[in-house]
Length: 401
Ligand code: ADP
Image (cartoon, rainbow, N blue to C red; front, side, top):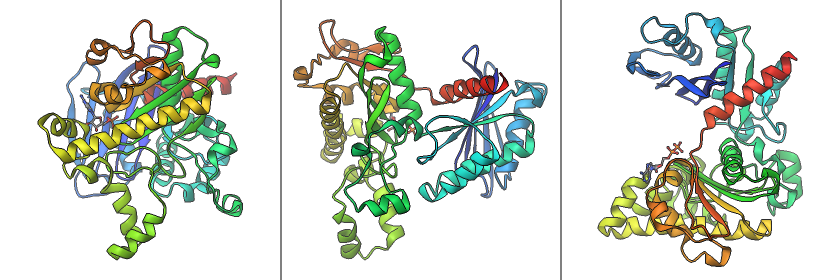
């Protein structure tokens, strides 16, 4: 099946055109600056030259029109007719408590997505716009929604409830939801495959470390806890997000600095994390350069980042009653041997013995611990678009039968 996978943000659309049977990306690209002066579309067809188009793209409907035009282009395209797109799979950020798995998008689903806007006011509206734009251009093509939150709907109430008055949960659905679920699901399943053991028997800690970062405790194939909460701000230190802090700090900082709600939100989401602590960058590569050259603030930021991950490994081992594997993924998890080394040092008590050489030079998806290490540490490349394509294929096939 040929599937167009879309990740629609407020001013950008990332896309991949995937042959799900062959697991091949035939083309991928990005539309940026939608609704701004000069929008840019970058399109990379497999095996052909990459192209860049600059133009005025007022909204998501026009952006999708551009994407379809390049996919159909005689020189840079990969299809001859729109009908070759068998289905569209959308990444949807927030499924609330409504969606515990991926779904075919129907009018009812659209309504539920709209009902969840309050939970993700920045993310769900562009996701909805993307779906509506596809409906306009591809009215007969099935569309599916794959949610960042759905893998975590298996969390027990004692993991997802905050210690707040219960009325707030009932009234506003204030609880922990967790995100990056598509990635945690993919890499934990892949971990079981590599270990050649039943997924349903394993206790796996997954660490998705990119600009946004979260960890999950995956017990017997189900997420039982995760570090992100009501929003993606909770949990680990991230590129520009603060992660866990004392909630009293919010009113304290607002008072001390004279900030309003929007400003404190920006401070916690955009000016904190690696960037805020280091004053150098939100990018781990630059932080690592600082560590290597002895920059004190970069070293501190790096240590805070790695320490929080280490702390959650222990917490999740306790939550699951043990740990069979610790999986690193995302731009940092896949590429930073320094982070993996820091997290895994002095973890012999958990059965973790990192192999220094394997950790420095990992090849593909692999195990990074010594043969006798009871708990395996692994590096697995995440592929959220492929998961969206495979879920979409399964849903469309089931719906046809
Ligand atoms: P996003 O969350 O935006 O998808 P990615 O998963 O691409 O982000 O991760 C981006 C992060 O990965 C950045 O902090 C970047 O510095 C880091 N990264 C990428 N390559 C390396 C590397 N070789 N070593 C250390 N960090 C890296």
